[in-house]
Amino acid sequence: MALNASRKPVLDGKECDMSGWDMDNCPVRDVLDRIAGKWSTLLLEALSRQPYRFGELRRLVPDISQRMLTQTLRDLQRDGYIEREVFPTKPPSVEYRMTELGRSLFEPLSKVLRWAEANHPSVKAARVKYDESELA
Amino acid sequence: MALNASRKPVLDGKECDMSGWDMDNCPVRDVLDRIAGKWSTLLLEALSRQPYRFGELRRLVPDISQRMLTQTLRDLQRDGYIEREVFPTKPPSVEYRMTELGRSLFEPLSKVLRWAEANHPSVKAARVKYDESELA
DNA sequence: GAATGTTGGTCTCAAAAAGAGACTAGCACT
DNA sequence: AGTGCTAGTCTCTTTTTGAGACCAACATTC
Image (cartoon, rainbow over all chains, first blue to last red; front, top):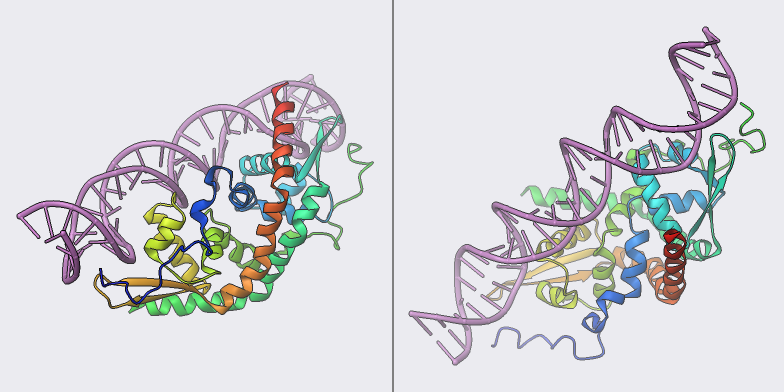
């Protein structure tokens, strides 16, 4: 096949050979799949500042459903980023706080969030440009 | 209400007042919702090393469907992180490469990926602990 | 004392997103 | 003539997400 004669072969061993990754145990995927959710970073951002209660988080992030708030908090708790403490008041109140592991994750993560804030205009500009070229 | 008398008031102005965020134009959410997808970081990781063609990416990430590969690449292109170039060979070949904007995003993002690799054991341990306590 | 509000959820059903697989066209190679 | 390659699209099914009702126990209000 002469088609790709001009291109150097790919995956010659030293390159980004993801095919060697164990996909069922890939650290990046295993960890990222959880924190990549639509709500995870938002909740981590809030809890990185101070502990909050369930209802407080719901008011802080108005457009999250209770269902997804419960589920996301549980996922974050299961992975060890946040802790859940129940106070035996009436009605019982529940407080969520970030763990040390969560803080160590949030350190690099917060840099991405700041990048997002700083480069939002560039991204929006890119979208406009793309959408215009698609009209054609 | 005596219930929360022991807790200090929340949202007194200086704290994490996300309720003041414009949810329809929140930079963090707007940018993160795209790169937080299941496949985005994986493709950015690959393309951060060298340009790849459609089929190469498909082989590199074996369990992505063609449908999601197409769509994720388009999303990343629309936001300006990658470029798409069609070569008029027969059959035509398409090459994807990272842009400067993409590289500037990948710099902080790669730190999160490295955190994920380094702390995967801690996360797995947290999960085991959580699952055990849930059995009770 | 009855109605209402508060807590942190769960349950159900509808809508949206993702995955699986077939199908395309034009050409090269056998 | 048959097979394979390219980069996708189209359809169908399964999974995920969202919207909203409902819960029980107690506090406050009327």
